[in-house]
Length: 127
Image (cartoon, rainbow, N blue to C red; front, side, top):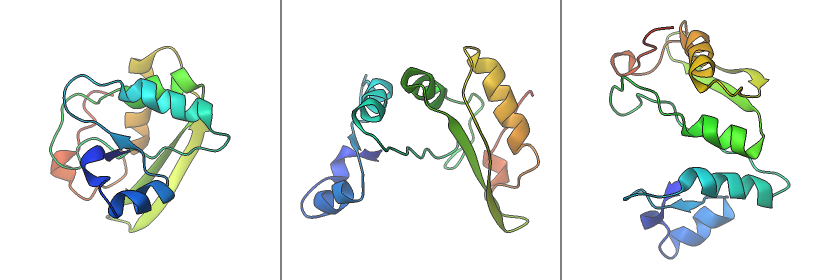
């Protein structure tokens, strides 16, 4: 997902060839529904989302990823860059449950011991 303003010629052609999907970030949009449709239209589709707190600290994690995964009936794979250990990896695939709050708590526990690039911006809050 890339903001639609970057899909101008000739960059837009390259972004589409690489699998980029333009999204409107202004106002009320249906990005979750758009991503669910993308999963249903394609035989193979991998959606990568960046974690919360990469640009500024957040206190509440967004749950759009959860709504996309449950709506498209696809698993979530947690990935990470551990900047302190200089390690990149993934966890196991899991299918989100109907309890988004509990799933987010499980995800926060997964990331609890991983060192982010900007630790001051990353909050696991109450787990």
